[in-house]
Each structure stands twice: as C-alpha cells, then as structure tokens.
Amino acid sequence: MENGLAERWGFRGSELVNKASAISIRSVLNEVMQNMDEEDLRPTIPLGHGDPSAFPSFRTTPIAEDAVSDALHSAKFNGYAPTVGILPARRYTYL
Image (cartoon, rainbow, N blue to C red; front, side, top):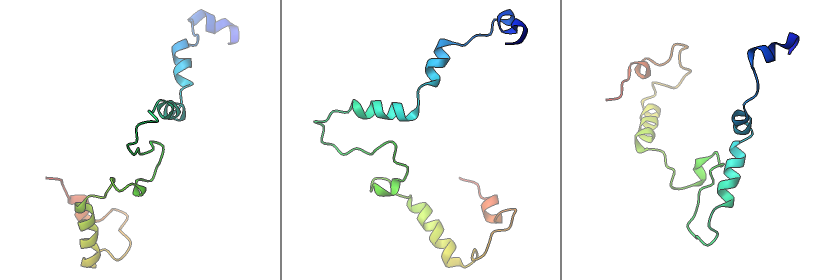
C-alpha cells in the first residue's frame, strides 16, 4: 500500500477468511453428493434443483389454491393492481 500504511496499521489478510471465501455452494453440493451412500435406494431430491414442481412431495398449500380460485371467481381483480397495492391485501393480517 502507499507509504507503508499497510504495515503501519497492521492490515493483512486472514488465512481463515481466505479459506472461507474459496468455498462455494457448488463445492458444498458436490461434496454432499459424493458422500451419499450408493447402496441407499431411497429417492433423493437434488439440492441444486430450483423448480420444486418436478417433485410431488412439494405441493402448494390448499389455502393458497383456494385464495387464487376465490380471487378469479370474484372478478374483482381482473385488471392491473394500483401502484399502491390492493387494499384487501394491504389490510390483511394473519390471525
């Protein structure tokens, strides 16, 4: 650094931080996959798969399905939402 300021203030890289920054999500995923027991025949869900719709165990909750259905049948929401949002959605509180 300029004028030896790095030495004066004692700034230096941390070996621990350097090692931690080298770890990626992909490397962790690869390590997990490499350590799976090949004789275990149970089905697995890949951790790196972004779309859950391919797996029947990931279902949308019936409450959400009913809410979408009710909104469609009411015909109250057949246009663009105002920029401030839909009033019932803004006022809703989970009980």
